[in-house]
Length: 269
Image (cartoon, rainbow, N blue to C red):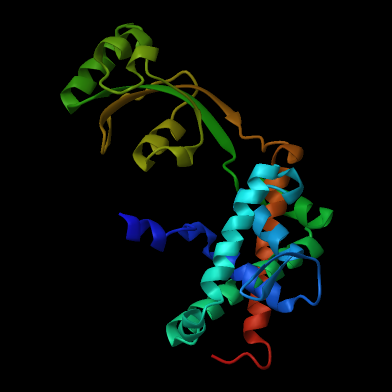
């Protein structure tokens, strides 16, 4: 147990923070020192960065107790990495490859974030995306109820009862095996694409207020369907989906930017 605890002293989730600390320390010139370990100075900028990463909050919000705890952690990091054995291990090809990949992934994220901040979606792009999305949506919605049974003969019998004047909702409550039975078979409003094809086709072929005169079979069983109402499918207001549209536009633009990089001169396979 003791050995296992030592091998995971900082936790895997801190590996990237430790890497960033090392890279930051290597890039800094002379700065204020918060501690010295084996002759190596821990710069305040490095400590503050590690503190924020470790606590997942701004360094200024850290309590004195938290700062003291994290300072000891970073001292331990420096103690482990300033011994001669650490220098030997740092030359291991697999370790060097790991560091290279972590560095590139971190830098790529920084570059991507900078790109998104510098290339926000324009109002024209958002408007165009809204118009495109609205035109692609279904033109109509239906409000329907159904009675689901296991056999065709049961569905035929229910249709006969409806023809004789039985109440659809009452039949659904007493006979349907579907989850909507307690609510009289009510399915609410839906677009054709929300339902399996045979069901949607049957609903589309009805008039408002009419029910199917023949059972409709799907993978769920046999249905008797009542189309109650229909309406045009109005797109949601632009402002209600603006953030999603903006994000989608920016993601698409970023993908095009990546494609340009992939095909640029000097980029080899």
